[in-house]
Length: 495
View 1: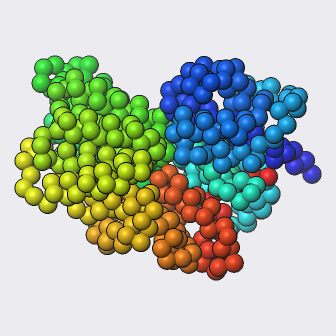
View 2: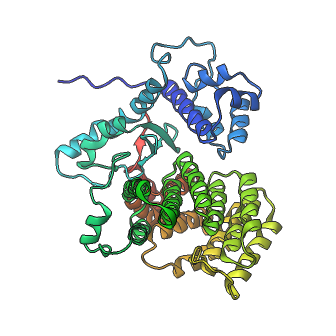
View 3: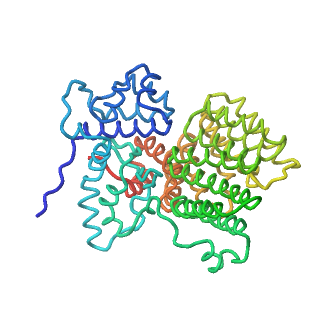
């Protein structure tokens, strides 16, 4: 009988988790270990040892790191798992390099009975859900970000090599859970045209724009993990076409390449890979500037403000949004986009008056006559503005008005916007907990979870992880127990 793999004790696995999280957030901010150490008044060597799991992180340092990296408190909240014995000698496992550390995280979260024994027995029978571990999201680096239930019941996100995750759960799901990182589509634009997606005799720029519109529709319904490989393959093909193009054709190909880059930024943002999202947004601004697509540059700048808001970097959110507004035509939807995302930045900073004024400004633009000469941002309507206002109201503690705003926004959503419905439901659930109680929150959370599992949207899972933490005190409530049990089925577990 094969011997069951040995697991790590919780303190060491937690220390490895903390180190992996610290590295992830540091690299997201594009900081070296020395630069981060300088910003929090410690040595880069200490940061290195903490990331490797060789040294514990003191509580006061974790709080400082959270503030420096804009994590929203992820690191300091995880400290209860970390062994506080700073003088304990590191084991052979602790001396491993970065890839070894990722391996330890994978062992710590995948060698629990709930993942290796019970689920493998389920796979041997035929009671298998192909959406198992629906919280898994591929990162541009080839790693995987996946939700994990920690030993104290919290849910957090861990980063591990893709191969470690697949090795542990492929037998559970009975199918490939994630698109292979970096794989390309087998369908060329010409083949896609012959298949009826676009007309084969149309100019390549129009072909690619039509293909992009199809991918946007797929993303709205299926989520990012189902379309990101195709989007990146189209960028590669556009770059090849630019090699042989000249004049206006090459300029227009550069513009459509920038449009795809902005789309990739969005896909990675929704997947929770903020570093990749920033990379593609920067490429979109660079390429749109080269192409002379001023409206796309403004649009992407506003989207970078939205990304900063998701990262809870309030200062960057406000500054990027104001930059977009400065270069946008007055009373245009592009200026309204800047106002909307800047409004949430003000809410994150606790400035309710500035936040509400910015939302009112955006509503005035979308309700009045537009001077736009571009179609960008046409999706920005009063319903979208109110949904973003509801999110900010919740952040400011005005939960009852937030619930009302989310309810109106959900009713106004087109049925094809399934992923957005899930985001609104998850955010509404957090507000409902404060305004209406745990039963209503758990019901909305369960509805959002079904969409999150189908689409792989990290934005939904992040909100549901927060909701799950807040619902722990009501585990005896039937709706809460049902929601948390369903969430357990799509996350890994720490031992």
